[in-house]
Amino acid sequence: MKTVEMKLASYFAAFASLFLCCGSGTVADLDLDEQALLQFSATVPHGRKLNWSPATPVCTSWVGINCTKDGSRVIALHLPGVGLHGQIPANTLGKLDALMILSLRSNRLSGNLPSDVLSLSTLRYVYLQLNNFSGDIPSSLPPSLDFLDLTFNSLTGNIPTAIQNLTNLTGLNLQNNSLTGPIPNFSLPRLRLLNLSYNHLNGSVPSSFQKFPASSFVGNHICGPPLNQCLTISPSPSPSPTNFPPPTVPENPRRDSHKKLSIGAIIAIGVTGSALVFFLLLILVLSCLKKKRYQGGALTSKVKGGRSEKPKEDFGSEVQEAEKNKLVFFEGCSYNFDLEDLLRASAEVLGKGSYGTTYKAILEEGITVV
Ligand SMILES: *[C@@H]1O[C@H](CO)[C@@H](O)[C@H](O)[C@H]1NC(C)=O
Ligand SMILES: *[C@@H]1O[C@H](CO)[C@@H](O)[C@H](O)[C@H]1NC(C)=O
Ligand SMILES: *[C@@H]1O[C@H](CO)[C@@H](O)[C@H](O)[C@H]1NC(C)=O
Ligand SMILES: *[C@@H]1O[C@H](CO)[C@@H](O)[C@H](O)[C@H]1NC(C)=O
Ligand SMILES: *[C@@H]1O[C@H](CO)[C@@H](O)[C@H](O)[C@H]1NC(C)=O
Ligand SMILES: *[C@@H]1O[C@H](CO)[C@@H](O)[C@H](O)[C@H]1NC(C)=O
Ligand SMILES: *[C@@H]1O[C@H](CO)[C@@H](O)[C@H](O)[C@H]1NC(C)=O
Ligand SMILES: *[C@@H]1O[C@H](CO)[C@@H](O)[C@H](O)[C@H]1NC(C)=O
Image (tube, rainbow, N blue to C red; front, side, top):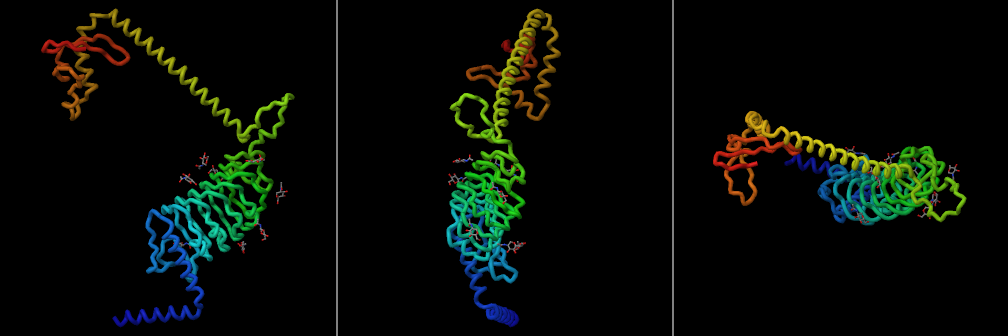
């Protein structure tokens, strides 16, 4: 007991001295961070339970939280795929004003992007991909941004020109949204990763971005290098002033026509193929029937051997022999025999067709079946 008390006392002393030497500011700041996080977890529904409790220390126990080395501020929030859904309310995460890393990817967050969070002047890495955020990208983003990933959301509007001010940006991923308008001519010297694919952007790729591969821009109404040449630019050689509407999808028209052609070809091949197969089958059936008719009664005596072999192949000697020997009768049938009876009976081949062989069997009771 004594030792525990002493330990507690020394902890308290250490805590007090920390408090005194560093000033009340840092602890108060961490306190505010904690409040902001608790507010966030209380208002945003999430699938998996977070272990965020006021009773445990934020920096060392809370899942998804990283602090500064001295444990005075929250600098990173990683909550990927924890089933967060709904909107991020203002004045929750937006109060984490030492935050550098924000990762809320692969959740079901919706509504506008949290503009107060995305204007935190310390923010460097933002991963909000694979949610359902809608609306515009905020027009003011912090110049500290290093990586911005907003892919696979439902964002609309233009690419904000303010991105030009993000001189430290090394990655910008905006693919698979619904962004419109032109691609601004940004000069971002550190940019290494760029993906604007699968939006509704139009115009051409500005000179500053032409060093990026075509796959950074596909799935838009964009033409010119590094993509295919624009269809709209190609001069109409026809002398007549046609009133065709301008092509609405200039990007990669070849692929489209190719697709249509191949679908047509597939249908044609399918139709001719099945017709051919059908005729072959018809000829086979007809020739078989003819043969049988000519050979007629000559076959009957030979059937016995074949007959006992055939069913054995079909109904192999497995455990559920009895089940297999059961025959299924149509409703209203009063017959009562099984496969064994059928095999014991004398039988003759009536004919062979495309569905198999037809036997005529006379059972012991004198019943004749086909
Ligand atoms: C965050 O903290 C966890 C442990 O709580 C650690 O494993 C991880 O490396 C830290 N991440 C960063 C970026 O500091
Ligand atoms: C995304 O949000 C839009 C409304 O903004 C809604 O119509 C759509 O169903 C949502 N999609 C998913 C997958 O939740
Ligand atoms: C950009 O990065 C450099 C070094 O990585 C850093 O010194 C500078 O403060 C950053 N700029 C901004 C606006 O954060
Ligand atoms: C870019 O930054 C400059 C000064 O840092 C500022 O005057 C300007 O308004 C910013 N541009 C945008 C679009 O935010
Ligand atoms: C992006 O969106 C486009 C168009 O909706 C789609 O064809 C493509 O498969 C998506 N990309 C991925 C990786 O799912
Ligand atoms: C785009 O920006 C680059 C570099 O800043 C510049 O050289 C070029 O002239 C600009 N192009 C246009 C079309 O504004
Ligand atoms: C891009 O689309 C907008 C409307 O969607 C249109 O006003 C504009 O002229 C288009 N720009 C180009 C270069 O096609
Ligand atoms: C951009 O994203 C699209 C769709 O997710 C992908 O197919 C393409 O390879 C990406 N391009 C680059 C350069 O990352």
